[in-house]
Length: 149
Image (cartoon, rainbow, N blue to C red; front, side, top):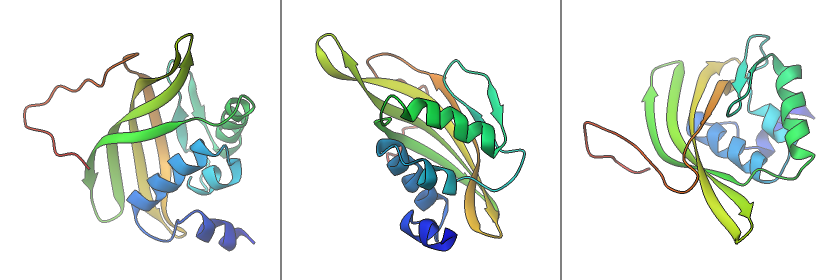
């Protein structure tokens, strides 16, 4: 049964596919698919914007379950910058997050880093660190022109 959940979450490929499955699970408030993206290790780490460091799969699951109690998280990765080696990948990105305000729906931005390791089960997330960005516009400072993915 676990394998079918993994296949349904598109976790058979590389870190990019795990990242796509992670954001899809956020957008659909699917805790099982979201947790399937994470490595099955005690020292995995998640930091939500302005939050504490959350360590371990049970603690991480609990934080996402609490967020999903309010509905899905409508977040999309933007301007992904990647560093990839044989067994690890680091994705630095801006998350566009849909928010509800008095005037209706709008976008806010979160700055995030996702770290993936190649494990016996395939590529899996070992760290997600998200920091508050700006409420209305995407910001990035760079030495070189950006390449959008």
